[in-house]
Structures are given as C-alpha cells and as structure tokens.
Image: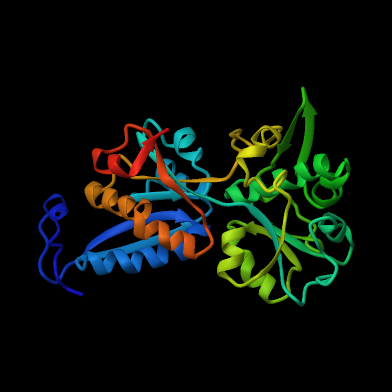
Length: 332
C-alpha cells in the first residue's frame, strides 16, 4: 500500500511523498500481541498510508523503554494500568485509559506430567512434585511474573496451607516473602540474582517466551493470562476467583499481597486491568490517539472479546485524556 493518509488526521502528521508511509510505533505487553496484531491489520486497512510497527515486551520493560532507554513510541499498552501513573505520569504521559481485563490460569498440555490429575483443588500439590517443572515470567520485567507470585501467595490463604510459597518459590529461587501487619511482601532480587533451580523452575523475561517451552515439553506448566492460553489453544486450570486476580469481588483479599521489584517499586495485588496511553513526546500524537480510539471502540472491543480478553465497556479514562476520546470513555 503506497497511498498517503486521506483521513482528517493526516494534516497533523507532516509532509509525505506518495511512496512513503507514516510509521506508527506501538510498544505493548506481550499478552496483547494477538489482539494488537488483528487491530493492526484492521487499522492499516482503514488507514492505508500507515505502517504500524509493534514491539512486545513485559509491561515494566515496555514502560522503561520510554522512561529510561530513551526510545520513542506513539502508543504504549500495558497489562497493568497502574504502571502508567506510577512510572510515566507526569513526565512522560498525562492520561491513560483502562480498557481490558484478564485473570491468571495455569496452562499445560496433554504431555504435561500428571495432566490427567491436575485440577483447581490440587494444582499446587502437583507443582510440588519433584519431577514437575513449571514456569513464570520475570517479576522485574513483567506484570504476569509478579502476578504469578501473588497468586501463589494467595493460594496459601485460600487453601489454608502456609508452605505453598515456600515450597514452590523460596526453595527454588532467591525470591523471599515477609509478613507484617497483615500484609505479605514478596521481595524480588535482581534478575541476575534470582538463581532459579532450573530442574524445577523456568523464568523468562516475558510470559510469551514460555509458550514454546510448554509446547516443546521443556516445562509441564506455566502461569499465564487466560486470554493467552485460549489464543494458543492450551489447556489450563482455572484458578479460584479468590486467587486468580480476575474478580473485583475479591479485591480486598488481593491487596493483602505486595511485590517489591529490584528497583524498589512495589505493586499491590488488585484485579487485572490493562491500560493504554499516548506518550507526551509521541511523534504522531493524533494518529496515536486514533489508534487508541480504535482499540477502545466497537471494533477493537470485538477483537478483544473474540480473543478471550474481556473489554471494559465503556473504557475508563484517567487524567487529562484527549477530547477525541470523550465519547468512548467514562471518567475514572
């Protein structure tokens, strides 16, 4: 496609020759890869002069590309909306939209050890078995990683078994738990110091990097978002809502768990909500807003729904969000 953009937003993008396309940079969470791939296809058809270039990474790393590594993007989409106000606002952004939900599950295949036994009541006992290897993403890079830690600690409370986190995490990594004033603090060492027992645990920077490990039989189970497991046709154990971080009803239980990353930043357990923004220094601000509008509009919501990720309808706007989005969001 070689035509220029003919929509009203084209005037804000700069002069382009007929052979050039506007490159729209989208940095996003790995778990948004499938939905954003489909949204990219639809958006480019509607805007034939646009070439969307996406970069997927763990959401913490996605934000750090902007705040620490000096990279520039037109859109940032993360799996934990709280990362935008805590890491980007006010210097790098002044608004964000909450647009989708999710929950944590434990994915596996028919070839996983004890696949015929595992269920929502005994999954932690299966993971305790010495011949079982499981995975999760790096809590310092990726919300799915620190949420996996929260789920495992919440399991101690739900199943009334105070040794679950110790047996699964502390005995196999350098991660540690402390308890004070009714709150559990899970302390993450530096990524190079996590020191996983590789016979029992696999850790990767982004949760999506564990998919091939499961398919190849390098691990038996891994903690992942429900939407990703569905998108890749994986079997999964549905975890109780009291621990899966997917239910507003149990937000008071979730907040008993906090994770301290190596940077000193602390994430508190809460229902999983995705966020999206256009950074202040976006090269193509208006086009970035148009992309966000597509994501939170009817077509984008349909894509999310079809791929197993419940959209927030209407999306929730926080901060000084643009007038162009007012008709699609409610104020948070």
